[in-house]
Amino acid sequence: MSQSQSNAAASVLQYQELERLQFSQDLQRNPAQYNQYVNQRIGQMTDEVFNRKRTAFQKAQIDLGRYMDMDHNAGYYKTRSKDVVTLTDMMDEANQKVMANVQHDKQLSKRQFEINDWANANKLETLFFLQVFFCVSLLMAAIIYAKNTGLVTATFASFMTGVLVIFVAGLGYYRYYYTANTRDTRLWNRRYFGKATPPKPAVKCDPSGNADFNMADFLPEEITKCASQQAGRFNAWQDNLQNEILNYQQTGQDPAPGTGSILCGGTGA
Figure 1 (cartoon, helix red, strand yellow):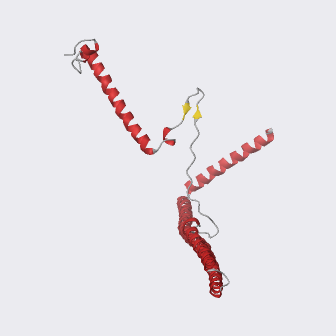
Figure 2: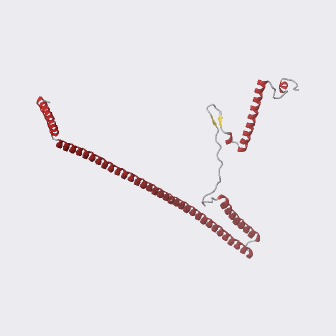
């Protein structure tokens, strides 16, 4: 800042102080004007405070209204979210039911097709047996007619009739037995082989060369159970014997009187 600017600023401040001093002296000379000035300043300050309070109240009112709107909107959003979740659950449950019904219908249709196929094949095979029976009956009628007319002997006719009867009976029995015991009850063209026994596990050896296997995999359950019981009894007998020896060493009391003398070559009496 230059010297001229500093002098100008000082002159302005001095002029302002002179103006304030002149205004104060004028108010002191005129009490009515002083009272009017004081009342005017009080009114201005009161209006300013009132305007500030009113502005603050209006701002608080507006903020409170916004907060209430936000709270209401949050409540509405929560209600809408709950409705959406409920609707989604209902739709998912309905879809699951539809899928379950479709799967059930597919399985039912597949099983019904298998039943119809099995029944049709059974009827066709029965029809085949009846056709064979009818053909054999015609052959037997022809043989009986030839025997009655003397074209064949009675022995030959009886032999051929017996062969045809055995053939028809064997064919009928085979069909009955295969259908009842060997044929699969679900699919006509599938044969039932029963349950195969699981293979025995191979014996493995550890790095030291000792065999690592479980006897329960090779022996029946009854034998392993009996062996486990006997092993438990033997362990209990060993524990009892060890306790008796420890008691004899500590107290000197012979658990079986006479045993020591017998072991040492005495009479044991």
